[in-house]
Image 1: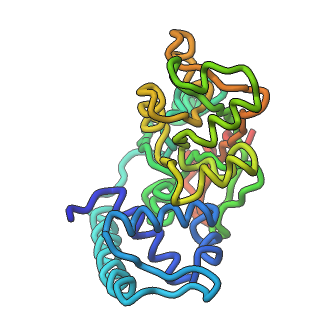
Image 2: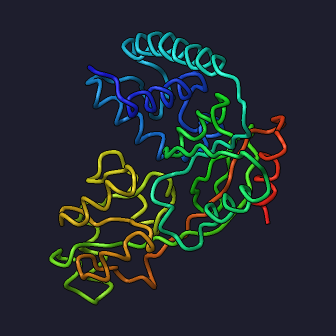
Length: 301
């Protein structure tokens, strides 16, 4: 097996779950919901072709294979983190630098103030540079904790809380809706009852930071690890939706190009639209340089 960024992300989730002693207990560390954690662990088990843990009425426990994977994971991640620290120490910062992580596809949202804040910051400080990386939610937390990011712009469901070692500020809201291709069965009915029935039989793809989508009936289908559901980034969801194989939960601003062309159809927006709160995160009690602190305060306005 060749390790990818996805594998490393899933291994970090597995390590957090094993150390916490269960999915629910790992929520505070990971900052994602129990169903999302369950989905990540199921994905890792599928990729490794092994059952890592027992979960159910008897409680949480690692399988013998899970114990072995945990040992290897701890050694691997320890080496990677030490390597990253040594790399960071090689160079000395000679110019002001603000390092920002963002989740994918926020740039098409007119409500996103990041570019405007960057422009104002460059006018405020001489020789200011930005380093921007696109990550998923969990990788943003990892990069912040490792000291490789100053801030991260992430999406969270309404009411979700970030881990205790982070400070968060609400920046703006992003609206997502359910979309399908024009030829999909769901596009051919205007009756909500018929649409509900079709959706429950459809493959649904949702970007990973929407942790509490839609309603109780569809919520279980979206997040059940055994359902016909894909949980990845927004571009992956959009590809699947355009291809007609899935119904996609996609930000409205990102889907706008294809809806204008008629290639995507939004399904019952009065019923199925959901809100993601876009927050800016940073570590608690982290010493900040002047430009970094200014940037944070600007995001809070």
